[in-house]
Length: 292
Ligand code: SF4
Image 1 (cartoon, rainbow, N blue to C red):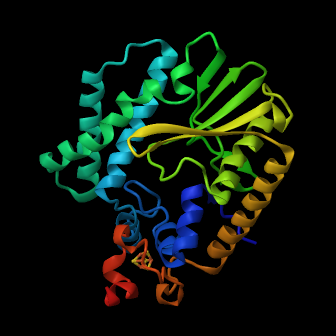
Image 2: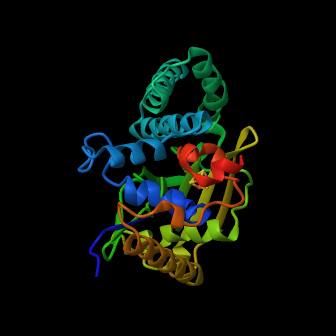
C-alpha cells in the first residue's frame, strides 16, 4: 500500500476531472520538480513542473489580486491604514514578479492592463458583502485565517480552512473569498466543496460542535462587483461534503497508485472537449494539440 501523501483541493480535483493526462504530468511526473524541490535535479521532472505551472496572464492577475485581498484583510484586522497608493505599488511589484517567473519577460503595457483589470477588486472590498461589516459593532469578533494551511484527513492533506471567520449574533460565519466567479450562486459541486469548511470548524476545539451554528459564505467578484452567497450549515450538508471528499481522495489515490514518474502519458485520457487546453502548458507535446 502506498504511503504517499494525497493532496486535495478544489483546483486539483478539477484538473483531474478535466484532464487526467494534465494531472499526471504535473502532479506525478513533475512532483518535486519546483526550483529547490527534491527532484529538481532531474531535467524531465523540472521541465514537467515548469510547463505545468505556466499560467495565463489573467490567472497571474487573479493570483496577484488574491494576495492584495489578503493584505487588505490582514491590515483591517491589525487596524493598519490601507492606502491605494501603496497597495497599487505592491500589486504592480507582484504582477511583475509573477510575469517574470512565468515567462521570463516583463511587459509594462501588460502589467498596466493587469492592474486595470485587477485593482478595482481591491478598491471595492470595503463595499463587499460581510467584509463591509468587519470592525463594526455587529461583528463581535473576527479573524483572518490561512486557507493554505492544510488539514489532515488520515494520510491526506486537504485544504478546508476558510479565508476568515466572524461571529455575528449566535452564529459563526465561515467565509471563502474568490477574486473571480461567474455566477453568484455556487453549483451543486461547489456547494459540496464549500461544505468541507464545516468539517474544519467542527474539529476546532474553540468553536461550536453543531453544524447549524455556522453559516457558510462565498464572496466573490462577478461582473465588476463583489457579491455574496450564504447558507446555514447542517449535518446533512457536512455529511454530503465528507462523502464527496472521501470519493475525491479515493480517485486521487488511484491516480497516484496507477501512475509513476515514467508513466506513458499517451495512455491517459485527455480533455476531449479541448475546453481547458488553451491555458495548459503541455499543449505543445499533447496529442490534442495535433488537431488544433
Ligand atoms: S493540452 Fe489539453 S488535453 Fe493536452 S494535457 Fe493539456 S488540457 Fe489535457
